[in-house]
Length: 603
Image: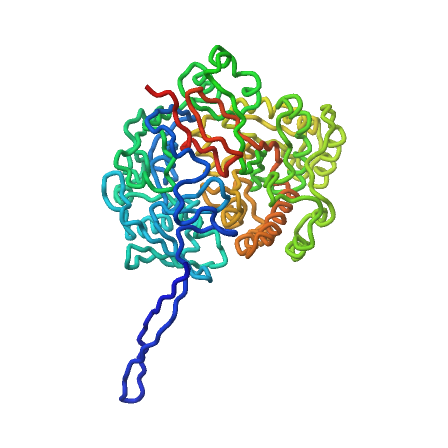
C-alpha cells in the first residue's frame, strides 16, 4: 500500500523589521505493508492464515527432550563474556518473522506493519498494541527504541556492526518506531533489523558489573524458562497467555508444551545418551556415526528413525586459516598447506563417499563462482588487478585435485615450490624460515574430538613437507572463549551463509571487523578488494547484480586461500523417536526448524 503524508513546517523569514512565517507543505510518499521481501513479492498475502509448510492441526500438548554440547554459565545472550544457554529462539520474539519457504520474506509478529520510502532512507515499524511480554507488560515503541539503542551502544560486535548504519531511532505517534538509515542502498538492513530479539527493559536495567548474569530473563516469545540446573539442563514451558499464539506466523508452530534441553560433554556422550533414550531428536554431524553408530533394539524395532531431512540453505565446512598469525599472512603459505589436504581420499576412506567437495564458499547456490569470471565480474574485479592473484582473471578456481589413492607427491612438490618462494626451506627434515630459522608449525583447534580422525592424514601429509601441525581438542566453553579472542591458528568450522547474501558479509570478511573481539571474521581477512566486493553486494539493485558481486567475492576468497573448503551436504541427518512427526516438505531455508514438529500418540 502506498501512502502520501503531508508534513508541514514553518519557515521564518525576517526582512528588516518585518517578520512573518510561511507554511510549507512537503509530500512524503512511502509504502506500508504487512510484509517485505528483498526480491520480487512476498508469497503470502495480508490475509494469509498460516504458512503452507506447517501443519495447522498439529497436536500441541506434547513434550520434547533436546540436547546441546558443552555447558553454559549464563542466560545473558548478549554478553561478550561467559557461555550463554542455547535458549534464545525459544524465549525471544522479533518485530517480524521470516518464513522458511522463502529466502527473504518477513511477516508481522510484534510489529503489525512495516513502512518505508522508495529511497530506503528509513524504516518504520508499527507495533501491535496487543504485544506483551510473558509478565503481561506491554511491548511499546519506546521499549523497542531502547532495545535498538542498547544493540547500537553495547559490547557485542555482531549487533554493533549491524546498527552502525542506523543514524537515528525515534518514537512516533501511533506506537511506531522509526529508524533513519545511513546507507539507503543497503536493502537488507531493514530486513535484519526486523529480526533482532526484543528484550524486556528489566534486562538492560539489571546488567551486573562484571561476571555473568544467571537471572531468568522475562520472555517476549512463546516460551519461558521454568527451571534449570546450571551448566547441565534448562526446562522451558510454553507461555499460557502468549499473546501471539493465534497470529498467522505462529499457527502450526511452537507445538511442544514443554522443552527440556540437556547438555552433554561431547558428541560421543550425547550419542550414547540418545541411543539409551535420554532425549528425542538428534541432528547428526558426523558421517561415521550416521553410517555405523545407530544400532540397537530401538533402531531395529523402528522406535528410532533415521532421516535425511532436505534443506535449501547452503553450508560449507572448511579448514580456516587465521591470517592474523605470522606465516598465515602469506597467501603462498596458505596455498602450500592446502595442498596437504587430500579431499578425494578423505571422502572415500573416512567419510564413506557421502559428501561433495565444494568449489565455492556459497556451495551450490546461485551465488557460487563457476568457470571463468563473467564480463560483469571482471568489471568489478579489474580495478584491483594489481593486488589480486593473476590466475583469478585467467583460470577457473577448483580445489586441490587428487586421484584418491593417497599418493599426493605432485601436490606436495608444488607446495614445496610455493614455500621456497615465500622464504622457507627444508633443513634436517623441518621447514624453517630462511631469515630467522623459525620452524613452520601451527595448531589446528577442534571442539569436536571425533574430527581428529579427519585431521590426522592431513597432519601426516604436512609432515612430509617438514611442517608441524599440532591437533588439539578442547571443551566447548574454552573453544568459544578462544574464538572470541582470535586465539587460534586454524579451525575446522562451518560457514552458515544466508540464503541471500548481504551486509552480513561485512562481519564475515571485512577489514573493519578484523580486530573486533567476537567477530565472525574468523580468517582475519583484511583485503581492499574484498571490502569493495562487499560494498557491491550491499548496494546491489537487482538479483543479477547481487549474483555478480557475490561470485566476485567468492573468487577472491578462494584464490587467496583463506580457507580449505572441505565438505558440503544438501540435507540434515536427523534421528528421532517414532512418536514425533513433522510436515513433509522438499526443504526449507535456514536451520532445521523443530518448532513445526509435534509429538504423536499423547495420552
